[in-house]
Image (cartoon, rainbow, N blue to C red; front, side, top):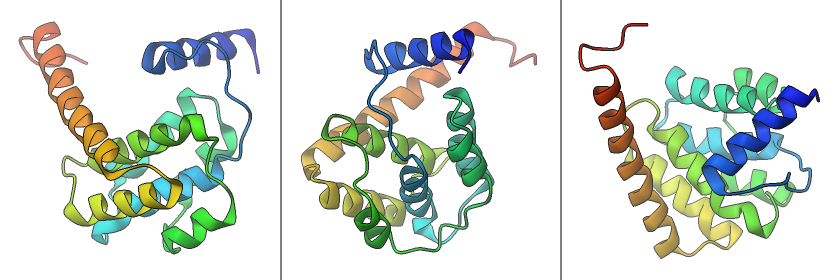
Length: 160
């Protein structure tokens, strides 16, 4: 990884989560699988959902997850995928819920069936339902703040 990639990745981690050093390396293919399976919880993996996760993987310079997320069909059973490999260390499990919610909502709808998949995943990885509810609420607030920021920066509409 180049210095610019490393610095950019650390900036994103610090800006989003307050993380100042890289977490332990991990297999992000199963993370991508789980997130995309949740996004397909409503029966459709929308291009916006896939592209959101692909873009995130690109920002982090994760070539394997990037390439994988571009084509994965998300037809596997969520619990079987989660059982294949422990998803993230215990300190990062809430982040997978956060990323899954953002991915599911990337098409403009957080469908009840997607939500059910996320709650199923959370239970499987030991995240309490109340915590998932809080993360969901935060994601909704964050989406509203994004809209407000964009409207404030570009009062005449996005020019680019």
